[in-house]
Length: 320
Image (cartoon, rainbow, N blue to C red; front, side, top):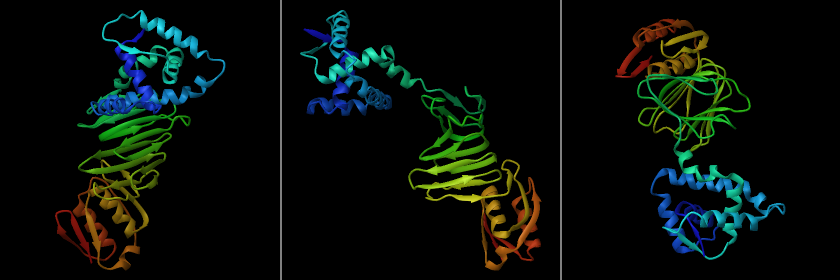
């Protein structure tokens, strides 16, 4: 009788589950195992990918699955008799497992350990990634590099605020993931600020980024000087232009209609501005602002448009 060691029995059972050959009891056990800890789901996904990639190899006439199974049996039998699971015969799913063992070797069995080895950086430091990209993390920010970073893409997950300077690599797009929204770039400098309670802000200093909300199918392309905001409970994006530096509140307007000026002011100062006369919205503004208070900005705007501003709330203004 052949025997499988516990880890090997687990992987064989997961193969059966993925190939829809597990019985009811086995499926219930795997479903419970998947819920025990997040890494278990990653393990299952990894095996699924290996199975899909190896399906053609398993069916290829040049691969001797019988010989692979015999090698697997010899290795397993030499492992000892304690805590083993009996296997009566090499079912098709076990033949596939044997082929996988021969094809991927130790990497297959080390997957649980690899799945947990996710590179992470915490706030208050400048992270230099292996592709040469740099990320200046603000306090309380967390950055994690997804597995396989740099192969087909460079995917990272961010919570908090960080300034990205991304090395160009057209073959491996750089993707910042925040919740269900992605910011995709080829090479640029931009700032991302995200929190589950505060929403999302993206500011582009150079280059171009594509922001996509997978939940609602919304997307926007940002170029230098543009800021995108998404409130926590909002489904859409709001986009503003003419913002040179978000940190120093540097705004530059050259014959820009008032409605675009106010969009930039709202994005930078986190205020809401209402305009009673819609005709004012088309008036053009030429001005530079940097490190100015919101009161000074509103006073300058109303002076140039021959209007009046009234503060109607803590973060609310009205122009008449």
